[in-house]
Image (tube, helix red, strand yellow):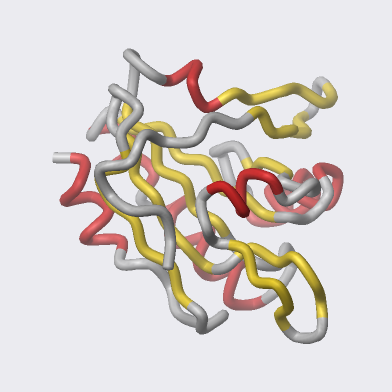
Length: 156
């Protein structure tokens, strides 16, 4: 079960790797400016995650039109996520939660998945401009994608 709707979104600062190097991304920088969509995913370079992120990539203009910033979040290292984003031509930030703190605070961290400890569950959280969780879903099934239509509906 992911964080409850109506909750104040836990703030975090995660690492993003892009062409100019490593940078910090702090969630609360969006508060008062834009809604935020957090897409937690388990593994870079896995087939289901590739398809999920490509689906978001292909509809990113819809999220932008709804005034939302999308972040993909995984417990993978930032260098792996940068290579993953490049291989998929993803143009929204993939953030590294290698310390597993954000995944834990959003209650979307597997204790163990496929024999690996501390892997993000496939989950989605929508946060209002005011920093309130307005949509939240998480799956124990590594292959089940979030409900993208419900995510977009929460942004309207």
